[in-house]
Length: 88
Image (cartoon, rainbow, N blue to C red; front, top):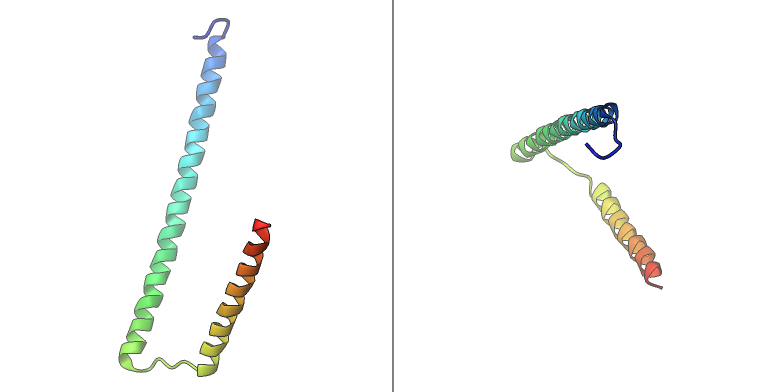
């Protein structure tokens, strides 16, 4: 016990530490459940896509591919412009 510190002060500090630890543990558990759900949904989506690709029933419109490619190029260009301005 520190000099001049009351026993009640120590127990209230310990209580706060325990509460903080419980809150962080709960947040960790919530995050873990969320990540498990995200990965599970992703695995299901990948399995579904693999099946339709193997079955030969997966069809993509060329126009949609072109739109996404152009959007990706524009996004990369814009990010490059933004990062160039940071160095100045």
